[in-house]
Length: 283
Image (cartoon, rainbow, N blue to C red; front, side, top):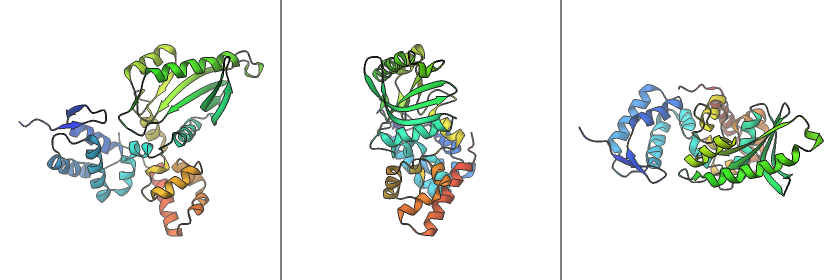
């Protein structure tokens, strides 16, 4: 029996190609079993030793667009988060929308006094006399991980803010905590420190069962960068207006008027956004 070709991950590590992983990612995007079988068959004929997982993704995405264009949009969720860059601010705004969807009152990009120094806080989330301070770590490289230094740094900043607020009569009866959210992954040490110190960690694949990928998929929260009906220039214009989610377009379609596009294209964008919002994903 021939061994599986070795593929290069975003981290540079080599591992055997796993058709089951590709099948799972396609299934999560709502791709039909027949199309999944067709794509995996073509990938198996095309793949060679040393090919990157990025190129495999691009090949699968290209094949998927020929069969199920809207499912292809869901399939590129991870890459759509990368497209929120190159700066980290759109990701901070996006995370604000994600947390708002959880029922929090949200403020993005605030400067807060701590006991020792002032701090720039990416997201402040408040609900039922509980306040969370969120640090967002955006990476343009999917292989980049946030290490333990990030967790240590955020823990100390959060503690400095909490130390002052615990003495402030305005926050009497409040409880506080801190989060770190990233669009990629954490190192093992970062996760261990977060779990030990009470710092909540949210990444593409952590915590299992409630990771960023699972939250976005479950709640149908998608960045506008996932929309194939938008050009890169149009996506950037919307991001500059703090329009970061498909839901914002659904709630206020008039924002598309600022793109100076046709009525037909406007409707196409809205239709795609609504489809992504309401379509259930296979698990």
